[in-house]
Length: 279
Image (tube, rainbow, N blue to C red):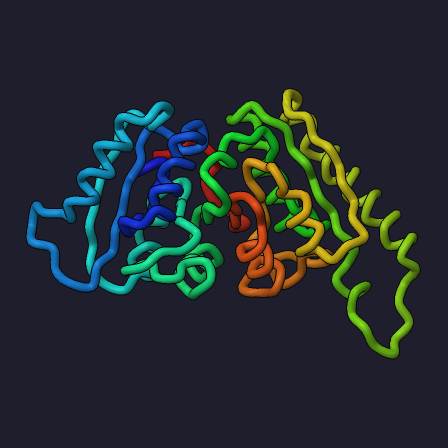
């Protein structure tokens, strides 16, 4: 089983995904699989020349996992990538590209893969120099999916030896205009602060070496998370949630952060492999 699978297509964006995986090798286990999807047949034993070159360059990178494999498959991009994800502990995609991964994040492929992957999926956004920052941001919302995001963020921060910023936004309903009476904003923020403190306290015993800073925001969830990602190494959100991050699966928050976050975004399912573990 590959520790980390990267969907690549020969674009600078997919090469940036490889760079992120190498810079964060502690999350990727011992093996890296570079997978490309094409619509035409690949003769047995052959693969695109650029993929072979990329594999060689990856093996030479500092921090690259001990084993780097390459694989060329044919068919539709989303089903083939999801097949690979079933056997990986982490899946990584570039923010956009062409060929099989055309318009990844701003189109359908990366969004669909990230929100359906059976393992945590990272969509690499931002400039290359942003992969080495020392903060992991987690979106927390009081749901089990928000708890899973915080758990993954703590495990990732532990592996990467960096800090966590746990972000709790006020509920979505507070931002919906209409004739109905809304709860007091200060009361909403106080509730969010209590919920966030309880969530962080629940994970502290298992991660005593990880410093977690709490951030409660009165902004809408997408804005709160986007602002928190400035200079961050990774943003982690649950696949779906309630409260501040409701409808994260194929909903507005996941779409919003995948489009707007200033750093790579990890979308984690409720169940799945832990960072750095494979096999």
